[in-house]
Length: 209
Image 1 (cartoon, one colour):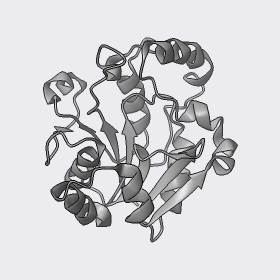
Image 2: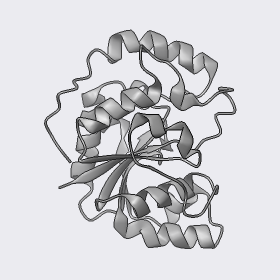
Image 3: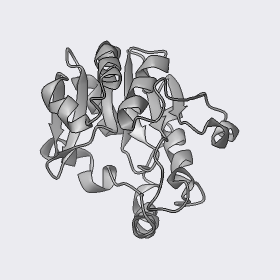
């Protein structure tokens, strides 16, 4: 099964005061770390951003929202619309510690579901989730009718499988795997975590989804 890795880089980074995608975690930025992981795993890697010129140097396809600037719902919609594959794994650009074994596990769980989404601290994580293209019409309808609250969409409209922390712990600490580098304090923590976590990530994963 071929799948696409999608990096969602549409946030305003208001708490970071600069584009969090370019927060330097090690010798690499957050988005560069994610790209390395995705390109070793997925048959396709693309970026969703309404400021595409900022990402062109990375050499990847960059697509803007089809329905501009309506939050993460428009980002997910654009990802499904532009991906070459029927299934995607969508990840925010500020989550460099994602463990690709978790991603593979989530993809394997998709089956007949529309989406597979992790649940951390009792909160779903829709910007680090698996989606099937069959839910594209739903996101189109939500955008056209201003139904933009993601959690409500998940609990009321999408046939989603929730992956609980007890399933994720076999791959590592869920709070580290899905850690967001979204403010200066989190960036300092991420740099400390990187010494333990980044070297352990294999860049030679031979599974191509």
